[in-house]
Structure formats: C-alpha cells, structure tokens
Image (cartoon, rainbow, N blue to C red):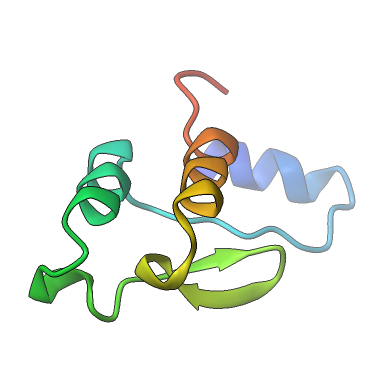
Length: 72
C-alpha cells in the first residue's frame, strides 16, 4: 500500500482519500445499523465525512460499489 501511495504522489498528485476497511464491514453496517460499533462509523464521501448508517440504502450501495475493489 505504501508503494502505491508513494507512486501516486510521485506523479505530482496532491490529494487522496483512503478508507481502510473491508467490504464485509460496510455490508454488515448496512444490514445491522443498530449495532453499537456502527453508531459512529464515519467514512469519507467526495471530500466530506458522513456516518455510514445515516446514508440511504441506495447511497450505501453506491459507496460499496465505488470504494471496494478486488485489484488495483
């Protein structure tokens, strides 16, 4: 991961948002928003921070689709 980020910034990049959690956590938070561990689970979306469970289901699915990748 460090090498990827170093390479990105070596290309004169200036900004990057990195969320570090697994797809499983996002899906579990979407399916079980009542769990204590998700009450303050905050993610970055387009430059702002938001509690994941406060998003609509459609928005949550969009976040999952846009941020979870199998390869780089």
